[in-house]
Image (cartoon, rainbow, N blue to C red; front, side, top):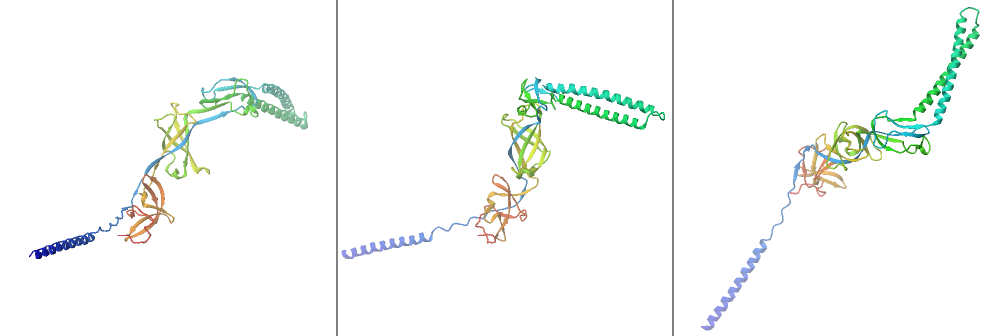
Length: 370
């Protein structure tokens, strides 16, 4: 009886172990059946193409210049006799600035005056002689026609000599007028390069530097070179803003009044000038300014995310989706605004569906992956 019971216990233990193994094996199978599923395909994100007017701005360097500025030189060889103004002097048009001295011109004028008086006397005599002969010749047979012609010829010759003497005198007087240099317009003396007694002239060392430089600072001109890519955004009469480093926090205004209408062959830019009223004289000629150039599109353009444009060896294009297939459309990129960019193409249409994140793997004509 003891043995039988002992055998029964052994059989019971073996059965329990076998059952445990079966349970473990069954659980293993269930774990294998519950393996993770494959990840889902990412959703293809598209958007409807639309047009809009974009606005941005760029800053271009520019230079302020006097609206009118000129360097004054001596026309004749002379010496500085008297200076009437100095640097910073406000001058009016026609105001005497400097008196020069040239003794030889005074001597030449005296000689010319003497020749002029002599020519006047000779002409007066020959003219009187001719008039007397002309009156006498009215009585037939008193004066021969030959004598009258000789008198007329002498009168004409003396008249020519008189006119030559007057022209010579006038020339010397004009030269004498060059000894007084006057302001050509209202302005400020911005430079002085001579002192009293200095030799000046049209040639030689005395002509190296100008006597004075005058600038009209009541109104300035702002010159800026606009790159070719931005010339389509400006036109004559546009108002622009600018700043200068020496006056932080202040913004000035100017209006485009002159455009060159051609590109500089070296810089490939168009020279644009603006007139700037400078009533308070805070702005100075020669200052460097920063012109704020607004880039306001005149017409609506297609604007897409930068990620929608593919730049590959095949060219620049966007990818559209039609009939569940990819289609490439070549484009030309325009201005960029943060994460968006203008694109141009005759093949693009409003509401066309484009891929937001396009790449080179999206082949032209291939089906869109589900």
